Amino acid sequence: MKQRAVVLVSGGMDSCVVAAIAASEYDPLFLHICYGQRTEKKERECFEKIAEYFGVKDKLIVDISYLKKIGGSSLIDTNLSVPKPDIGSTRIPSTYVPFRNAHLLAIATSLAEAKGIENIFIGVVAVDGSNYPDCRPEFIRAFAQAINEGTKPSTQIKIIAPLINLRKAEIVKKGIELNAPFHLTWSCYKNTEIACGDCDSCVLRWRAFKEAGTKDPIPYERIPE
Amino acid sequence: MKQRAVVLVSGGMDSCVVAAIAASEYDPLFLHICYGQRTEKKERECFEKIAEYFGVKDKLIVDISYLKKIGGSSLIDTNLSVPKPDIGSTRIPSTYVPFRNAHLLAIATSLAEAKGIENIFIGVVAVDGSNYPDCRPEFIRAFAQAINEGTKPSTQIKIIAPLINLRKAEIVKKGIELNAPFHLTWSCYKNTEIACGDCDSCVLRWRAFKEAGTKDPIPYERIPE
Image (cartoon, rainbow over all chains, first blue to last red; front, side, top):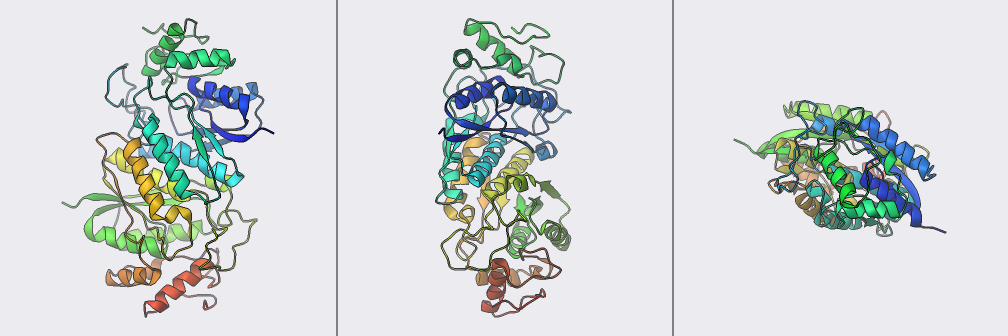
């Protein structure tokens, strides 16, 4: 019998590949977190379609839109505009949601501990991503230690972050290898009908497919540079 | 000018003492988290009264009752009964809410980072409490490390847990010294009109006041043993 795993699935391309990896080896419970981001509704629809694609019926959607009240990010504060790409900079972009991944991992951990599940998948990307501090291996390692100390002694939970050291193009290749349904995903930071092609996230995604030698199956408002 | 601090205030006796400590040295923002526990409404009323007592207008209430959906604790699952006291046991009681304090600290951290606040107060008690893993110094230390790694490099946040190594009677003494409004607090696990006097939490509280050589100002349904 396959081991169970809680899989954080946002609806974006990275977590779609993580879902494909997890579904190939584990019995997954898909966990989706809404946090009041601009594209909440779109991401949730993608989550549902990805779950359907993998035949996963065991799903939980958790709303932490209190993050919107807390603010501090252009991704959730509609008074701030989504910045132009600044890829390669070491600056933390304004789309950074303060400590967001700690909330995601805390929810996944409570769920895993309550259900006796020992694995948590998360699609953080450190190498080639948006330079968010809560995506780095040092954070994941520190949080794993917090899980170890803050749960019952009998609870054994492992964080699996299979993309953390992959470049975006390698993630695309991995996804293609596993038939990940990239056509069902949403990465754009803006809440437009089709992906803007302009924001950090669109640019990173477009380049990744190009570098992987393939074409992104989703349409763009404007072909990213 | 006083430094600012996010202070987690549940409405119980421990966080009331923490609030008194924080209010004496910092400019506090009181943060209250509802998580679908049986006594949610009572605790929230106590939180409001404590904030009023200290003249704190800067308050945030965050609802994480998704923990109720996740379950795994008799404190939030009304299908489970609150257990009889088993104080002194090394067993984790069924009132343990899986990894709850990680959620509290993650919210406090996001709030602190978004507002540029460098201190978080939390009233965890390790020595003489209910034996919850997420109240131990090892967990607090590990979580502090996760904060350090998972927030912006320019963000400096310290977790201050002034009660962590105090015995319950010492907490009572500390509170009396600082005029903490114990009469405004609620500790009982049950959602009764007055404190049951029967649950772990009532028994621990009652004994603490007795040992501190004073009388608990709140009424009890039944005098605890």
